[in-house]
Amino acid sequence: MSKLAINGGTPVAAPETIRPKDWPPRSEATADRLREVYLTQTWSFNGPEEQAFVQEYAEFHGARHGIFMVNGTVTLQAALEARGIGPGDEVILPALTWIATAMAVRYVGATPVIVDIEPTTLCLDPKAVEAALTPRTRAIIPVHLYGGMADLEALLAIASKHDLALIEDCAHMQGGKWNGRGVGSWGDVGSFSFQQSKTLSSGEGGICLTNDDELADKLYRIKHIGYPQGTAQGVARTGPPAGLRCHNFRPTEFQAVILRDQLKDLASLIERYNKSAERIDSRLRDISGVRRQAKGRLASPQGYYAYVTVLDEEVFAGLKLNTIAGAIRAEGGVGGGTYGPVYRHLLWNLQESEYRLQAGGCPVADGIGTSRCLVLQHPFLGGTDESVDLLAECYAKVLSQPDALRDWQAAQPTEDAG
Ligand SMILES: *Cc1c(COP(=O)(O)O)cnc(C)c1O
Image (tube, rainbow, N blue to C red; front, side):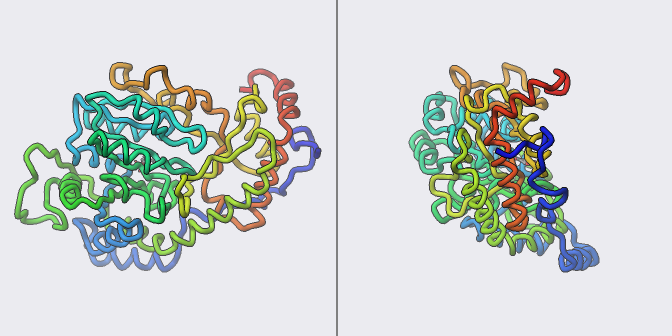
């Protein structure tokens, strides 16, 4: 076995040979279009760029309506508000996700009920959802996380049996399809984020997709201070339904321009990510204790916010993620950790009375913690074949030598090993 670079061996890749795709994408053509829109002085209020974008984005994902907003947290909040969810209600969400999924539930005054994930997909476990239902449960928010999709078939069956809203958090899953139709078009509402790091990005932004005409009108009113669907600021023909709390969640035309241009390349981007994921799979397949996050059972194609490698508890026992990721970096590669269980995140500040964990806690999410998954951000899947193969080689070299990693870790001064 070749000596690890942390132990003075030759690194797999020379500096700068492993490169991400230039991200977020930029082009002179988009810059020109931004300039044109700037000169039109139409910058908000459901302008022509927004109208075109929501139609194109909804169509791509197989949904009837798109409602464009300022970010992918208020889209979740708006989805809950449109379904009339508020104080006294419980909303089920997975233990492994970005904190925004849970925070949106608190913003509407409802109680997040945190339920465990499947060890394979790392997404919401339908069996754990059923066990966590109470008479107060009103909605389920599965998250299609990193490079996996929640089991929509099983979750839709639970939602329909118990008359619950199903809101898909698709912040990680632009362009991914479940059984041939876009994520976000299966439940009552699909929520997407266009924040800086996501697979389509306008710096900030978000969209709700829905096939329900009434929900579409409510979502539009919620984001546009009560104006009916499709209208600009001006004379409203009708006011919002009684009790619907409306906001200003309006984005600008500039965001729509950027996203429309990126959307044209989304299908080929996802195809590229899938090919790169397969290249890495084939290199890591036979390494003991290493498996990839399972794709969605009916994913076709799978979207990727990240490619995630799951490390076996026993094979990698005692190793800190910093040790493993540091060894990969020393080989010239890249990689980091997951968010960890949402209720253990540094930014998590809900009081114990404000949320509930499933009975007995979430052993799968807690077992994975922050140390048993390696996360490779999507722009690296967009690199050249050569770059992707070198990355896979860095992972393979490091992950096949857990004993050498443990020896190295043990030899570090304690303050550096943290
Ligand atoms: C990014 C993200 C969000 C929120 O999106 P913002 O646009 O950053 O508000 C919600 N859920 C998940 C899983 C995310 O990763």
